Structure formats: C-alpha cells, structure tokens
Image 1 (cartoon, rainbow, N blue to C red):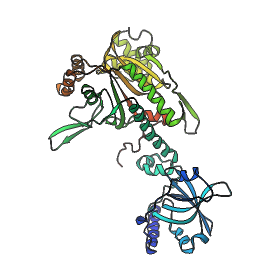
Image 2 (image 1 turned 45 degrees about the horizontal axis):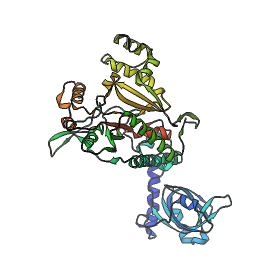
Image 3 (image 1 turned 135 degrees about the vertical axis):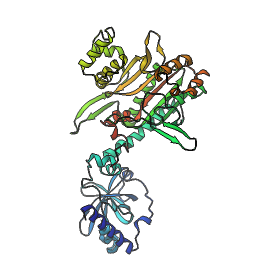
Image 4 (image 1 turned 45 degrees about the vertical axis):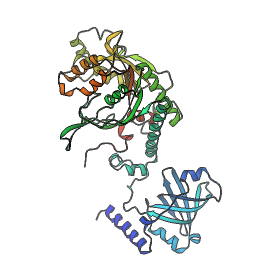
Length: 482
C-alpha cells in the first residue's frame, strides 16, 4: 500500500471513531456569524464570534492547541484549552486532520505575540477530508496538479485564489460600466447552424432531434448585429466562444469574450469606450492605472501605464517602422523575401496581405507593451468593417494592443448589405453554404451605422493581474486527458 492509500485509511479510521462517538461530520450544521477576515477587521476584545473554515495548520501544546482556520476571506487562529472544553471534547481533536472543516464559537482576544485569535468555547466538525493535502500544500508548485486539480491550487496558494476573485470583480465592473452607459446585456445562441463573425475552425456537433449539424460559436457578432436591426441601439454580451485550434500561452479552445455594439457610433467611439472601460476597471478593482508584472523571483519585469490618452498608430506606419519605409511600394515577391529575412514565419500559400500580417503579428505586436490603438487595418483582414474613405485598401478598424498582445479589436460596422454580401462571398471563396443568409437578409431590412468591439476577457485579466499564461486566469483550462 502506498503512502497516500495508507493516509486515506488512517483518515477513514478517524471518521469511524468519530461516528462511534455519535459524531457524523457530514450531518452537522453550523452558521458562521461572519467571515474570518471580518472578525479580524471588526476586532474588539471579548467579542463573541462564530467562524468556520478549513484547518490549514495545528500546533498541539499538550493541554492547549492552536488551530489555523481559513475561509474565502482569509485566515484566523483558534485557541483551544482543555480546561475550558473538558477532557471529552478536547480529546476529539485527536481525530482531526489538516484540511478538515471546523466551525468554532468563542471570544476574540490578542495573543502575547499580537495575533488576533478566537478563544474557543465550543466547536463543531463540519467535514472530514479523506485525502491528505499535497506534500507541498502551502505553496503548491506542481503545474500539472495546479491545473488539473484547481481546488488544491486554490487551497494551497492564496495568491491564486486572489487572481480569480479579482477576475470576478473585473467582470462585475465591466458590466457596471456598460450598464451605466445604457447598454443592454443579452444572450445569443452558442450553437449555430453557420459559424460566423470570425475566421476560425469551429467545433462541430449534431442535434439528434432536428437531424442536422450545429457548430459551437466562434464569435458573438452576427446575432448582436441582428439586434441593432431590431432596434436595440446599445447591446453587449459576455459569453463563451469556442475555437478548435491550438493551445498556447495566449490561446485556450474555450474562452470568454465581451462584444458591444452601439448604433450611430463608429471605431472612434469604440476607442473611447475601450479606454474608459479598462481604466475604470483598473482603478476600481486594483486602485491603480500602473500595472506591474513580476518574474518568478518577484522582481518587476515590466510596467504597464494605462493613463490616458493611449497611443494611436496606423497599421501601415508600424509596419514601415519595422520592415522598411518602402514596404508597401516593393513587389510582393520582395516583400515575401524581406519578411523571411526579418524572421517572420510565412508559408508558400500565404497571400500578400498575410505576409504583411505575419510581420505585424510576429515582430510588431509583441513589442506593444504600453496601450496602443493600431488603426486602419487591411480590408482583407476584416470583411465586416467599413472601408476607410481616405484609403480604400484599409478599413476603419483598430486593434487595442497591450502587454504585447491584442486585447480588443473594434471597427465601424459595415451596414451596406450589398457590399457586405460581396465581401463575405469573397471570404467564403465562393462556397455558398458558408454564407449566413439570415444575417444578410437582416441587413437588407436596414441596420443603423454603428461601432462595435470585442474584448478578450482572459487576455484583459492576464494584463491587469500580471499573469503570463492564459491558463492562470481560467479556472479550469483545457488539458489533454490523462
């Protein structure tokens, strides 16, 4: 029998001993008066409290015992005395282990070392943990365990739990910001007959009752634009998208997106929205506009300053800075060679605009650490946006790049149904079945001019919370099954 199985058997034996005494931990009820942190913050000597949490440490002093309890809010120390609880009750502690749940009642006091604690008058066992915590429970470092068994990561690493609590606050404040501006939150289908709104490989499924194929959505866009047609002038959705593509530090097959659309707006109004929203979230949740990212040793590795106004630069100007002032004048073959020489990864089947895109994505975007609105992208990249009036090879689009990655694309929406059909047909390569006819019919009923934007919530959280991998801001990231 290995060590883990032996420890499990020992814990089961302790559970049996408790039940023999008429104590069944899983049938007990206990109502805390407050959280552990609230008890510490509202300290007054002798105040009675009822607290509950998981046992994370205990120190047996013979006739007394110190126990650390931790709930979502934090930790507090409990002090048990044999002469107060009595021999029988005090003896029950021998059947407790790390990770068990305990409810305690008592009075607040401060120890000689200055630590706020609870002097117990009674306690209740609320759950028995039958498995021991990992060997390095405090500061769990095994990445495989952290991702596969996130609950152990949350128990062992309070700073990880703080990341996810702050992620929740970030999403709450995004909603608050949009609601305060009159946006209506909606829900649109996750299963779609024709996946649209982006160029990505979808996950495919089959609906048995209807006898047809469906796809998990790759974007929120086309249904939200239908609502603009229907007269919902400011609309947003926070939801999951699914793309059957590779995993990386920046990519997870299932991810969270915000998309927002505003009738009578454009890409300029979306710039104002994105900048205002991100600054509001940072100030409200983090109380700062200066975000520090730290390395493994805890040293500051980079600092991101969100103070407005954010930099604006055109796509073409950034490419010229990196690849040469004559980049857009030279022949396509020369562009391809120069891109290769610069270190951009390209293949033989890349179209000319994709060669330029590779230069931007691989060599320019990673350098954009401070907030930058990259504007006026090539029209081939964004078939759902309006052409720029002063340069019809580009569209009225921006990509908001922070922390070396795209956080939010946005654009002036294409509302000309004839132009939209032509560009979607071009994107589909003549495959009529890939066209969302219902969306095009909706446009023919008249869609107001509008601005629209999408924001990757996971990447926003990475930037704001100083995390280098998308897996560290997603509670349960996709992993290959064992």
